[in-house]
Image (cartoon, rainbow, N blue to C red):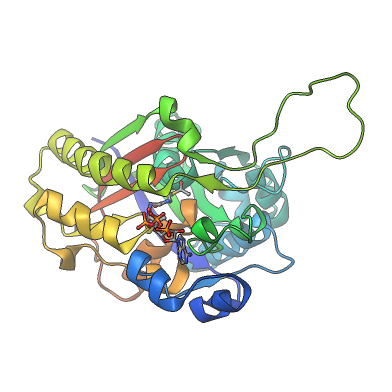
Length: 324
Ligand code: ACO
């Protein structure tokens, strides 16, 4: 049966690095607290470059690494919780920038599960006759939605973008199975960019948009329960045992969450690589950012089985099991 496979992967992070010690200079926190609670040592922060800018750099890298021309792309999807604007979509800005004149483009909003959800959206389109080449990018400039006076969330996040080219494949490589779930009743556990309806007409002046806020404990409990379930369900659907999965590429929100997931699944932690120390939580970018690093280092090889999992705002959770 025809499958949807990853042709190329690429990433881009802004140059500015902010260490935990740097944060200790501007808020009441310390490297000791942040690294012991989260595994984060530093993050990249974007100055003057918005989400579409980071994603466009990834798009150009993807095109350079492949033999695909911009005109040959049929669909561009950007997964983000920090778009440049309500409209146009960040994906449309990328389409314009790289002159992918034949591509339709739109965003997917599923926070840190966005890339994993986006893979299923891409898969659905690729099963149509006229869609053959898809660019899927997860990109975030979270630094612009964070309240930098709130130490409980400010220390966790970073900026970056990463993505893949997806195509139909006649080989046995590709998406084997997926499991996606949304728990909308828990939506208020993680919010950003909230806008209220007007209370009086007309409302004059500036529009208010809320900063990021999160119930860290609740999200921690959610992730450590729902991600293992999602991986197990996807593996069952793919008809494989967890032991057959070579790599678990988990959303990088907290190293303790990843460790807990490995324990619950009774799989060795060596199969759960992490790069959170360097980038922090980059939301929709984190799964492809780690995937790119592992592919470039030659750790993930063609033919290996990989589980890609995200979780976050919505609340959402999702897993794709792929043969790379
Ligand atoms: N520096 C120093 N002290 C701090 C900081 C900080 N940056 N932040 C909080 N504290 C203090 C608190 O004030 C509290 O002090 P108190 O005991 O005197 O009241 C103490 O540290 C413990 O705070 P908790 O919030 O209980 O800390 P916890 O151990 O739960 O760790 C954390 C917090 C790291 C946020 C954890 O709950 C977590 O990782 N949750 C998951 C969050 C997550 O993954 N979110 C991303 C989801 S993805 C997405 O969609 C964006």
